[in-house]
Each structure stands twice: as C-alpha cells, then as structure tokens.
Image (cartoon, rainbow, N blue to C red; front, side, top):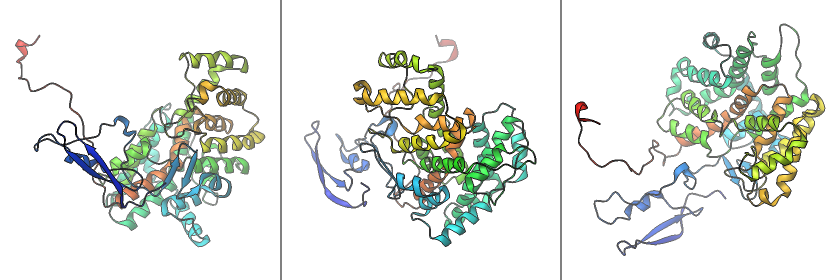
Length: 436
C-alpha cells in the first residue's frame, strides 16, 4: 500500500564482510531504505561509498506519490485510491482528469468550472497550422504532435515560471484542452484534409471525433456509444504510475523546464514501440496470423521462441490487467455499432489458450491493456499511426499530475543518476601519425 513517508518501521542490519563493520539503516514505511544511506558503507574513508546497481530502475523508487496505486500481483489499479473499474463504469474522462490533477472528485460546481476552463482553451494559435503545413504529407502523427506541443512553449513563455502554482494551473488546463485539437490537426494533415476547428458545445471526446472525421460543411454527429467508448479508453490510459514516459516527464521537469517541453519529452518516450506502440504491434500480429486455422501453429512458434505473443504480460502486472477486462467489455459495445472486427475471433482464441495453457499461465502471460485497445481503435476508424496519439491525449493528465507532484515535493532535486564506469584507465594521447 501507499506509505506515509515516516521512518520508524524498524532497521536493517548490514555487515560488510570486506571490513567486518556493521551498519544499521532505517527502514521507511513501505519496506524501503534510502539509497543515500548506503553511502556510509566504505572500505576506506576516501571511498565514494556503496551504490545500488539497477538497470532500468526495476527495483528503485524515485518518489513518493499519491496519484496512482498498482498492485501487479492482484491486478489492482486505482487513481487517487478509487478503483479503475468504478471510474470506467461511472465517471467521465474530464471528471477523472480532475480527480488525478486535484486529488479529489469534483463537486458539481467544480466540475462545471473545470469543463468550462478546458473548453475555453481548445483553440490553438493560427501559427500552429503553419507548423503542420511544414511537415511532409506522410509524416507520422506522433512526430507532428510532439513537435507541436514543444512549439507551444514559445507561445506561452510565462510557462517557464514553474514555481508559480496559479501559473502551473493555467498551463495544465491549456495542455489538457489543446491535445485533442493538435492530435486532430496532425491526423487531418496526414489525410490531406483541411483542419476542423473545435466545437465547444460538444463533450471532450465528441469534439475530438468531430475534428477528426467531419467532412466539409456536412453535419457530423458522433455515435454516443463510440463517444462513451473513447471516454472509457481515455480513462484507462490517464495514468499508470512511474512508467517510462512518466519518469521522462519527471526527469525533464526536475530541471524546471516548462511543462510543454517536458511533455514533449514524455511523448517521445511514449513513441517507442516498447511503450506506446504496443497496441499497434498487437494489431500487426493478429493480421499476420490471419485466421483461426493459423493460431495453433503460431502458439507453437511462441513456445519455440520463434514468435512473440504481443499484448500479453506486463512489467508490473502478474495477474490479469484490470484495464484489459474493461476494454474487452467495451469492445463488445463498440462492435454492435461498427460491426465485428474479424481480428477479434483470433484475439479471443489467443486469450483462451493463454489462460488455459500452463506454458503461459506459469509465466504470468495475461492479456494487458494493449491487447484489445488496437482492435477497438481500428473498428472506430482510427488509422494505426494514430494509436500512440490516442494514448498520449489522456496520458497528458497523468504526466501533468506527476510533474506538479514533483515540483511540490521538497525532497526532489534535479535528476542525476550515478554510473559504474567500466571504461579504460588513464592512458596517454597518441598523435595521429603514431596510431594504428
């Protein structure tokens, strides 16, 4: 569970067998110790001191956070203590955004004010359209989105005053509001279509769908089922603790960079195929399998390490990803409107085998959030190159909550990990004519 941050949970006794010295280190609530407490362990007084070597930060806590709680062994995900299942069933994305950013669910008055503030910030400067016009026709939507978010820092130079809480609040609302607009502009550029400006009488997700798919002056009314499905998908992707992109947001934010620049860095981390591109990889896998008849041969290929089962297993979850079960239910509602995606039957068969076959069960290879999300996105008409963008829009809320929490944490300093140097010892420079 989340810890209170107090010490007094006992001590850890460490004996250094090199010197025979013994040390007592305080255990903080949550069964953690301070890494800096290891520095006192030395062979000689002039030694640097003991460090922990942890590639990928797999067992290192860099912060205390109140935003998101995950218990991977039990398949639990909560935002500010509220189970994701309850939020997905009963809440809207902007209500969840308020919860993640403010720490509490809003009252009706607070919700109305927050929705109004977001709605009033959906437009972007016309010069941003010129920026999109500078990209090639086939530029990836995520690359355009990263660039446009970074460019926003030049439109709002006051955002550099990150220690002003009121100023932070304005920039946070701007970013949450403008992300769907920028994403839609990137999509329209990729399709060679003129941009559609926000229509602020629509909801957050309905407005996004309108900016994407409206053609000319014809009316476009998003199906309420699809609007709600996208709202649920946005809720599920809003935050996920200290993952790669959230850590990138915090590391960049620790230098007191403005939120637009920090967010662009977090998005760049998300752009990687091991992070935000995973659902795209699932879709490619299902398309390559092609039919139910090919599933047995594919499964054998996985067992023989000749194939990769994408969308199964997770760095954190060792049980069924709670988001995956919600998405699976949502997919059934979506397919009633769009028609059944032919890839769904392959996905269901892969899931059935993985949940029954000891090869997969013993390895905790359960479906994760990426397994079904790509199928739904495709059914709703989103092209594959937009998948990571659809991830970035809601995750903006989580990144900003993590960023603000970092700035308000008195223990945080500029991120500066240590290294273990394994290169050459001192050696002399060799003139060019003597080399080789």
